[in-house]
Length: 366
Image 1 (cartoon, helix red, strand yellow):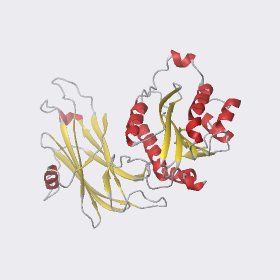
Image 2: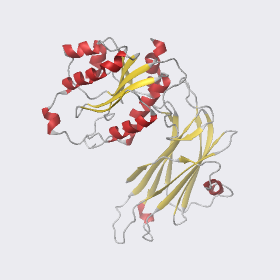
Image 3: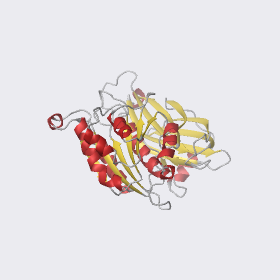
Image 4: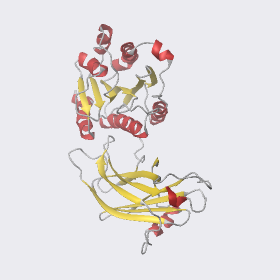
């Protein structure tokens, strides 16, 4: 199985490709000539607190090696709100050329996952995938998004590309407030085969961070990212901006989960590293309305020392937002630190848990 997770791009109304894209869905659709499986994904709320929906496209590899050319694909999605105008998204990608005589494992397939963000409402989805041999497959389906109890971050009947929510920066029209956020760059669950954080783990961590800043209407933020496995502070800034988000994303992507260096093994233990992190955060914490620890709950073991307790008790309104896939209150070293300072510890099993926890973090909820 060759798995691809790619973002679709919005096709601008004035783009040259718009006419071509619209023609794909005009008239009577031709019969499917490309053998494929299109699985639809029901709308779901993510840790960005946006509703996401999408599809899985599976194409058997054996039909891609007929003439030896490198397979190239074009995907187009038409998303039409009920009573509204369609929005088009597209993507192109190419696969490695299958060489003459190369053996393709039986049952091998290319798997492509994609999607889009949508506001509350009802939508018709039309999907098209075509290759460079003029073979294609299509599917049409309907979805419905209910607003639910969490105030939606997108207006009804709105559609945008994944990534189209690219963070625009801290609030500029709210009362002055500063947060210090200590983010743990670690996988959401331990997996032995991981060398780097998966795209899913990175997405959840970064989306949770920017949503935290947005929903609390923070106007200034210190962000410190830590790698407790290798006991390193991998990123730190007192002026978090959209450009800094890019730097943070690169730092998180470089975290090495496969190797622990001799330097790490000989260096300070997890408890000593926590002392270092808390000491690093003291200056920014003194200027902040709250300090938020954000990250997975399964790692970072150690004990609270008198020095850690002293540093923790100097933190204003400490919170621990612990990301987890299994029910149960966090009880790792971070949770113990926050509890020692009479702070709030919350498990984030679902996006709804996240939304509720943010209400307590907001400066207005002092």
